Length: 162
Image (cartoon, rainbow, N blue to C red):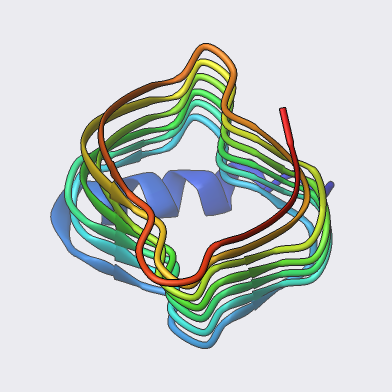
C-alpha cells in the first residue's frame, strides 16, 4: 500500500477542515487514508480503488458516499466512525472488506456487491442499516455486532455467513 507523502497529507488535512471533498470518478492505486478526520462531506462516487485501500481509524463527521465505487483490492474500514449517513449503493468489493469495530450512524447499501470475505465483527449500527438487493458472495461475519434496526429488503444473497 502506498503511503501518502507528508506534504500531501498536510494539504488534505487543511482541506478536510474547510470544505467538502469530491473524489467522484477518481482512480486510486493502493492508498492509505487511515486516521483522517473528514469534517465535511466526502464523496467517492464512481471512484475506483485499484489496490489495497485503508480508511482504518478515520472519522467521517458528515455524510460519506461510496456509491458505485469499485474496490478491486482488499479494503479496510476497521474502526471507522461514520457520524453522518454512509452510502455504499451499487458499490462493488472484489476482495476482502473489513468493517470490524466500525460505527455507523446510518447505512444505505442498496445493490451492494461483496465478492470476497466481509467482516462486520464488533460493528455498531446506531440507526437503520439498509441492505437492499445486496449480494454477499463471500463469507460474511456479523459476530458481536449491534444493529439498532436492520432492513434486509428485497433479495439478499448470502453464500456464506458466520
